[in-house]
Amino acid sequence: MPCFDKDKNHSCDGCGRETSKCLDNDNNHRCDICNIDLSKCADNNNDEACDVCGEYCGNWIFELNGDGYWLTSWKKVYPIDVVIPSTHKGLPVTGIGNDAFRDCTTLTSITIPSSVTSIGDNAFFWCNQLTSVTIPDSVTSIGDYAFSYCSSLTNVTIGNSVTSIGEYAFSSCFSLSNVTIGSAVESIKFRAFDSCYSLTSIIIPNSVTHLGSAAFDGCSSLANVTLGSSVTNINYRTFYNCDSIENITIPNSVTSIENEAFYGCTSLTSIVIPNSVTSIGNNAFNYCTSLKSVTIGSAVSSIGKYAFYKCNSLSSITFNDTTTWYSVDNANKWADKVDGTQVDIANLTNNIDTFVNSLNYWYKK
Image (cartoon, rainbow, N blue to C red; front, side):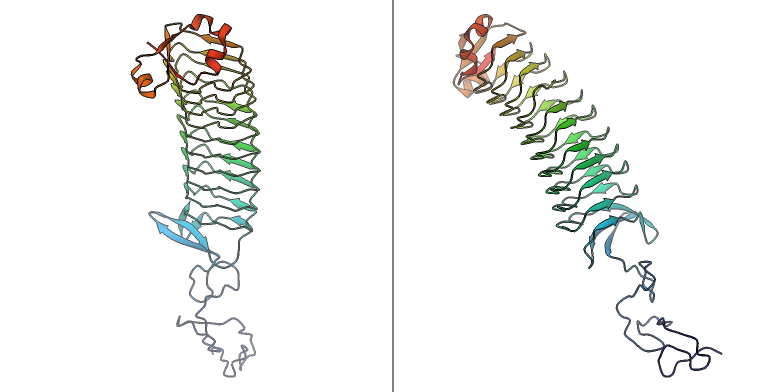
């Protein structure tokens, strides 16, 4: 004989057996015993599934995306120490969506499962208590602003399947001192590590071909930089105001040094421009006040305005190719390589001010 509970006290009137857990056999979200409203899912055993209807009722919001789910937000409880589940409703959790943890100022740690392949834009933007992140080898892309303004973040390990680090991805992570970039990264985009004031060293792996503009702009503690053998350009403001860099080796893969690339690197003492480089942009080494020695490769055919301006410690300049050089004050004439005034390259070291304080563009034919 089944239990019955006419007085609705959650105890069987016949045998006295406790029936304290609400039952909803007809799935109408009202208890069959006490008729209490069960329209809001309950999870008394903390398995993140409703005791009544079996639907997921954890703190996370998921959206189906192809053959898996993306975690897109949280519901009610501000997360602190988060372990992202690897599956949801029998399918893998493959992504962390745009803005998923944005402005989550309580978050102190995050564990990303190996099922995740993508981290969206702004995913952890302004998680200012987050201290460390390990991005697993399964992840292939890190979105724009993904960890921007995570001001307590000190350590980041980027897995060996990531191919792209988005714009501003780690920008303004003021405490970030240790970064390991995985061996598959091909592109470090615009301002990816901008204003990471505590970063002291970086190794750009050989897989990287694109080093974005202002990628390390304002990294004032950055003293040791290793550039991989595939980087093709030192772009606009890539190392702008990185005033702790003393020496840097530019690989033979580089073909151009763009405007303001090393502007304000006040600790830089010497630079060798390899024979692969064809152009040096405007203000490229402007205000490198400790720069003493410059070697300019044989393929360089144009040097922009103010390229070595204010490099007042410069005492040695070597041109690997002493082909006739010209100086001109007009950008159009510089581009067309016409109407310039010939420069005596052979005696330039003896007349260093001609180079350092030149307000003109330089070119060779």
